[in-house]
Length: 177
Image 1 (cartoon, one colour):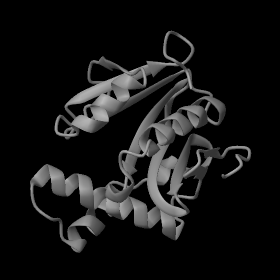
Image 2 (cartoon, helix red, strand yellow; image 1 turned 120 degrees about the horizontal axis):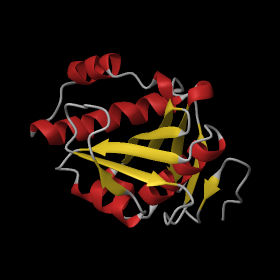
Image 3 (cartoon, one colour; image 1 turned 60 degrees about the horizontal axis):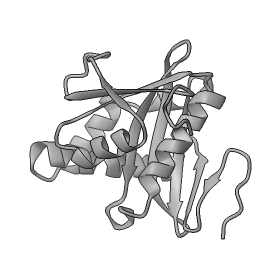
């Protein structure tokens, strides 16, 4: 069993720790994230060029440094998921890029990644609230967020690809992580 270290969240098969967004492991996970979610959205496989263009247009640079944190989940020792959190305003963080590779889904990794991101939002960014947006077709994600205490709110960011917006307040009937 993996023994947790500071800023590392672990289960018997999952270990989650911060990693630089520009690390090759992070880059690979983000590439695969975009391939999966955008292919689902368009109903066709994305080309490598299209994914590279998306990564350039929608950078994840704000998920590092003083205003963000990028987390990588390893399932049975292999990079298998990610989640990011960034500061939107003082006390308000945003959850981004939550994703688990298909072969590691239904193992509890997504909940562990979200919980680790919540902790990073509180401890690293000083947030008391965390928000997120998601699409209608990402049914599993919406169910996970509801299970973890997120409540649907009005559009807070005008994201054109989002259909649902959620928020969780830490320490107020949220089942705070």
